[in-house]
Length: 341
Image 1 (cartoon, rainbow, N blue to C red):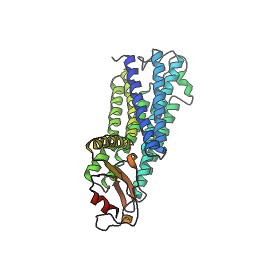
Image 2 (image 1 turned 180 degrees about the vertical axis):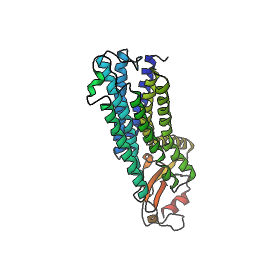
Image 3 (image 1 turned 30 degrees about the horizontal axis):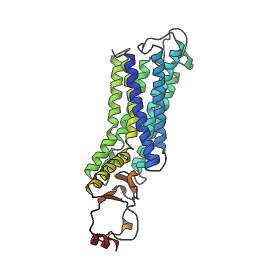
Image 4 (image 1 turned 90 degrees about the vertical axis):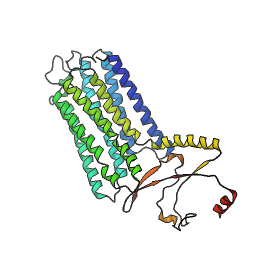
């Protein structure tokens, strides 16, 4: 059996990774893009706080030498209170990353797609309703007085050890996880972009499968491996990984900056510098093109290294994916002079 010390080492390691990824996301928003934090970012931060609260409860349990006793009730009232609080940090906290991705969906789905907007409102309503049901059940499962969970003596009912409540909360969480995963599929099918880009976006959205797999692993462990310390690992991994995956969806600009920095360094050494261009609206024609006015091209704006390679833009007839272009400048004097005319 895994030792409690190893469990704590794993839990704090994965929490640190979650902190790093969320910090990188905040860095992208505030410094690379310079747009500040959005609602999706705030929900994700609240989810990270829930992870921290769960780890604090587990650490206190570890210090009280009660981590190995997962099912059997303890005579210590402080431990009972800690276990009661643990349910809130996990069962309710696991919904905050979902709220974050839903807030992202509201920015992604264009108003020109009313069917998807209605589906998004339905998804939001279901997720919020399930979250409130979870709060209500975690509070009043054993009766109208929550203090019954940490009363002296042995209790016939506690929120922490109720397998029926565990099954209910897991089912509600699993349903919302699956709904959040499959929601963007119609959007990907309707994107005006290449198949390669669609596959890339599908991989980003499909990372939610990892959270679902961990959730199933925790559920199976709870059902068939009673009073096992590994359940702490499954629970911490599930909520922290859900936060990490949502954070990863916004880190592409940072990866592009790192890639472009290495590419620029390589170009400098080879004597062939690169230059990034941004598209803007104007009535000037594209040089060397087929007389297509720039005013007919969707505006992207110069994002320097802070922008992602591809962006989803709301168009009048659906969703258009635009991208920035990096051109390699190895010019002759005559070409440079003609391009300025």
